[in-house]
Amino acid sequence: MQPSIDNKVLSSSEFLGEPAIAQISATNSSYRMYLENPLGFKDSPIFADQGTIFSTTVTGRGATSFTETQGEISRRLQRGVTNLEINFTARRVDTPFLAGNYSAELTLRCE
Image (cartoon, rainbow, N blue to C red; front, top):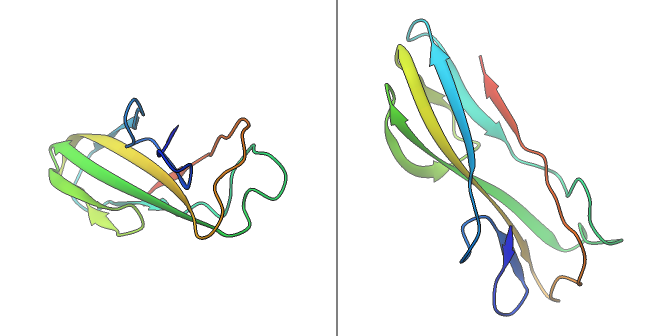
């Protein structure tokens, strides 16, 4: 994750940020995938979760192709391999993020 100029956004889609990469192999087209929206940081300075809005986006390429959409929206998978590019964003409503180390853990569900 990289900070915005005003330090109110931490995101993998900011300049020099890197998205997470995942690959799903579906044996038939009855599966659906989505990202659980995180409730907070895995590691961060104290009280960093307060006043922070968390969101994810995902893009699919391969057997199932789709443009960037909100991660919590369920997508039906086609048979075959789908490559995913996942971005995470944490946005502060009022005050900037404090200096420190931040990390988040995302859960990708395929059911």
